[in-house]
Each structure stands twice: as C-alpha cells, then as structure tokens.
Length: 423
Image (tube, rainbow, N blue to C red; front, side, top):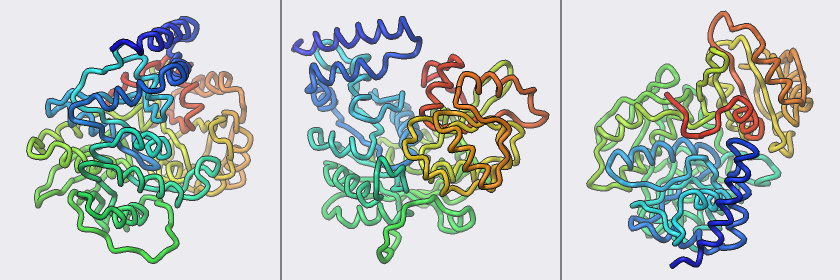
C-alpha cells in the first residue's frame, strides 16, 4: 500500500531543504506537514510491530530510561524502533516517521519502544494500545503546562489502563502508587529505591497528593546501594548486580532500575540480568543529561533542567563548587515564576546568565544570594563570553540550561546529532 508516499515525499523534501539552510534542523516542520497530509500514518506505523508498542512516560527521566531500555532490548537481540532525538510528542513521532518509514508507511523492527509526553501518551494510546507501559513519576511541573499534578496523574492512569500486557510503576511515588491501585486485573510490577537511601539523600521531589499515604508495594527491582553519586547496586529476585550510572544523582539511579525492571517484564524468560547490567554499565547519557563534550579542547558538562524538580535534583548533585558556570533559561519557560521555588544553596556563583529569561533568572539568583557576573539575553554573545574564560584550574566548565537554550547552544557549538554522545 503506497497511499502515504506523497505525504512522505513532501516531508522528506522539506527536511532536505531545511537542512540545506540550517545544518541539524528540519526535525519539526516535516513532522507537522506529514501529520496534516497523512495523519493515519502514525497509527499504521505503530500498529505494525510484531511485538507491539512499549511506552515510557512520566514527568522526568523518560529519555534516560528509554535509552537504557532500548539498549538492553537490542543487546537481547531485538530490532527496536525508538525516538532517539527525545521528540516525545505526536509531532515528533511524525518527524521520526518522515526519516525512517518506507513509502508504504512501514518501519522495519520487532518492537517500538518510545518515550512519550504525559498528555500525548494519553492521546496516542486511545488509538494504539500499548503492550507495556512504564510510569516513572509525577513531579511539580511548569504551571503553563500542567496546572495541577493531579491532572498529570489522571492522564498517566488512562495510559496505564490501556496496556495489554504489563504496567511498571514507581513504588516510591504516592502518585504512581495511586495509579497502581486503580489497575484492577492488570499485571503490575514495581521498581524503587531502598528507603534508607531515600532518607539519606533527600528523596526524588515527587508531587504531593494531599491524601492519606498508601502503603509502599512490594518491590520487584530495587536500588539497594548508592555511593559516589554514580555507583549503585540493583537487587531483584534475591540477586544483586553492580551498575555504574552514566550521569550523577539518585534520579538517574531510579531511571536505571526502572529500565532494568521494564526489560525484565518485557523480555520474560529471554531476560538475562548479566546482559542488562552490562548494558547499563556501558550506555552513554542522553544528550544534555550530564553529557560531557569537548569545546575548544576543554571538557564541558551539559545539564538540562525542565521544571522545579529537575532543577533541584541536578543542583543537589553538583559536585563540589564548579569554577565556571553558565545558567541559561530560554523561551520554553513561559512562566519563569517556578524558578523562585528552587533552593540554590548548592550553587555558589554564576559566570554568565543567559537565554530569553536571562534577567528574570538573574534576579532570582541574586535574590537567593547567588552572585552573577554577567547577564545577557544575547545567547551568541553569552556563548562567546563563557567559552572565552580561561580553563578552570580544577574540574571543568558547567552549563545548566533549559531545553530552548540547550537546543540553540548545541547547534551553535556544532553538536548536531543526539546519537553522538559518548560515556
């Protein structure tokens, strides 16, 4: 059946023309075009995988968990279709199809494993029933996106209820425990972090539910040891495996154990923990999630922050006192008021504050007692100023940015591909 080829052809021509003008571009508009010309191609593609669709969703950690799960599945011999660019809304899926699908509207592979935005997962799962759903968490988000965490929980509960095989949930988030309580008749398994570790390292910033807490479920896979910000032990079925995380922080430990349990349920009798943990020990970070890059012969760490919880968790895990820091908050943060809710006590200074919301961010930092040396909403100037600073005497340069600044900065520095990330 070739009824989709005209739309795909138009999308690919648009993608090529855009990339002639702007290297690394052309990912958004072609998806919009195909979604208008052939909206049904998305359902055809996602219904075409013999082993079905796996959805990874939640407020935070989707990209890292999905990358880990995909890598484990591939190392077990599966051919996996995924969205490595982290484009996790419907428009992004159409854009991926423009790149990957045949003119018949098919993508070769055994299974689709996709990270999905909470609301878009609910919309997509109405038409394509997922085989398995992993729900990571519910966090306080930007108010212009989700005015109340309860609305996020409702969407995630609907997605989970549509799973035809299994649901994987976080045992350390009261929101996901509430979702599990509604899934009568569904096969639910749980991942989590030892409560002693949670108490020692301050928890994971999950959103409050304002109801009496439910009991923690019996956990199927758990982080049972955590040391040096990246070294963990995963326990499952009375066995233990050592894993070295690709990025710092307890939130990345949660992603790893979520991927481990998701793979264990997905693969069933084919699952080999030794393969899974070897994969977790080798998988690189997702771009901008603790990604280390070389700029002008210097090491630079990129740290993406997207809401109050991710900002807090990443600041809490800044090692020592980095000598040089760029702080960028872009136009994607439509309501920067949430910046005022963050504890910046672990941030001792900022060399350059930039992005569309540079002045709002700088005001917040200064009020919170964080000195800011330079503030500019001219990102190009900010990049030149920051990377003109002499090499730090210890450690490396650190960039903390929102998604808008992240995309623009990576492009300006020549980092085009989300796959060009090494451990």
